[in-house]
Image (cartoon, rainbow, N blue to C red; front, top):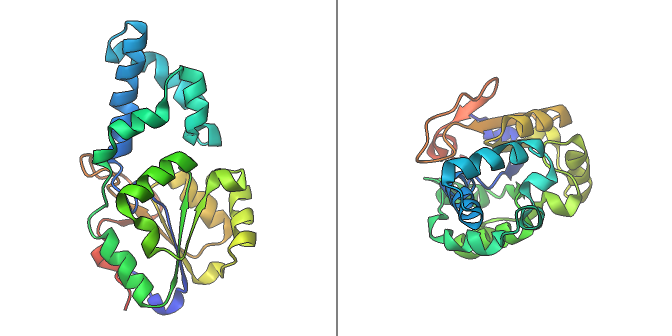
Amino acid sequence: MLDWDRIDTVLLDMDGTLLDLHFDTRFWLDHLPRAYGRARGLDRDAAWAMLKPRLKQVEGTLDWYCLDYWSRELGLDIVAMKQDLAHLIAWRDGARAFLRSVRGSRRRVVLITNAHAQSLALKLERTRLHELLDAWVCAHELGHPKESSSFWSCLQQRHPFDRARTLFVDDSLPVLRAAREHGIAHLLAVGQPDSHGPRRDTGEFRALHSFSDILPR
């Protein structure tokens, strides 16, 4: 799928790419509405009906990913609630071996994530993911989500890379489109971010189903 002779830098998303999206799916679609409902005397479905438009309203912005924002908005300790489900944080199949292989090939590996710093810290603590990276960048540090062209301009300045010789893997099509606009040449979309969910249509991007399919030479 890839011509590794043309790739020097590998940029990787975290949730749904290196880590199984099941943790986040369970949290946002089940754990959060149940807790929100309990606080207001509502069942899960009624609570979700109230939460869904509020989430949709800020989708694609930093607020969508900000745990402090949702703690204020919903009156819940979102960080503590994430700890409740921390046992579900897990690698996607083959992701750890892929990282080791890329590092062994002497290519630069950088994690870029929209995850809030406290969510990132929890996942690094559980997986030790950072031990297999050259660097990691949280969108909140740059002040822009990955869906924004401004994120990519800031990333380019902070961690310079040759766009023509960079691979980027993500499970979000809007993010991949922003990366393409920035000129990144090699793009892959994760076909099944949640191991408990169905395969997704990856649109105009080539689908990645297994990291074993793209191990570097």
